[in-house]
Image (cartoon, rainbow, N blue to C red; front, side, top):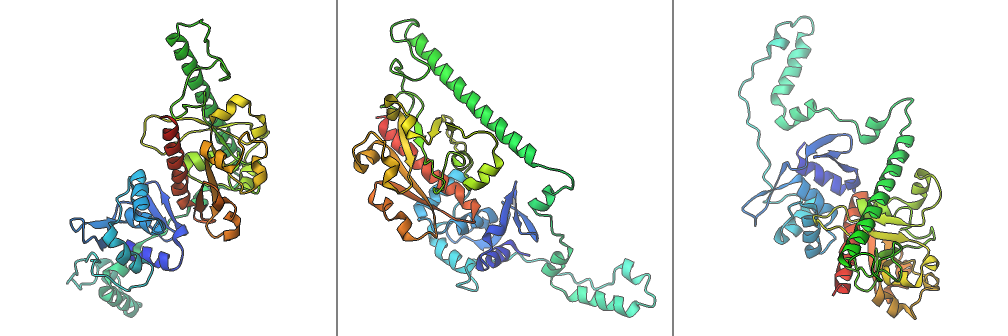
Length: 393
């Protein structure tokens, strides 16, 4: 099966969510597997007549709703070659079934064999079933080469089938891995804080009247990158209500790994008490300098000096979320911090009616297409980093 034809079939059937990337391969359900960088039959008319790779086409069709500038930026962040602007519409029309063909398509042609001899393994031992065997051979001789390749392919197991083992429970392994990952991030955060404390003491001659406190309190004089106003690690606030998509339970998966996991699912995976604070970093970045952020969901527990460290908030869309905040109104609030409202793309307009009156970035994700979460998380990071740069000047 040609990968371009197969991708078109999956697009028309709305089965793109069944295309899963495993390492350097794309798996189409349980049927076919192709290398990510395999060249397809669709040839660009504007980039030295290059053929688009399967990776490029899948990234395009899953993100065609983005503006071209946003799509180019998203493709660059993933280091995937992008579809050119002139190729976008004809390619989209073909993949979605609006057009049946395109002059940009040039399927690879297999050489036709003139050898019609019967294989030795078939002809040498013909006995009572000679007529049936010869009939099968004639069918093979006249069959399309693509069909012969399909007949020889063997479907691979999907990831659920590979992980299935009788009398084996992976839940304990998974929770242990989550726990170790959380401990590692906590240790890294403490090491960074200790390093900043030590450097500040050396710069000041150590032991003077301006000795820095470990709690980032009034004595602290250091300023982290992007935190000119506040002192210490920047803070992101999330709602404590379960009615919102982002909570302190799933914010780490979304911001660090670019995967949205519903809060109720995370609660089943996690053990122990609810964390008061989570540390997150931007993992999927080519930048060497990585800023750590604290994520909290209890504004009432913040000290007055902590509010200068608050740089972002995920909003519920309810006024009572800001009841105990030290700012006089929504205008001042979203001038001091950057706001995000995460919603499902097919939710009613009413759900974002209040938020649209605020200076808040509205970000939509799919309920089922998890491969699109990464682009949404990148939107958050880009807006947050832009805000942090503006505060650092």
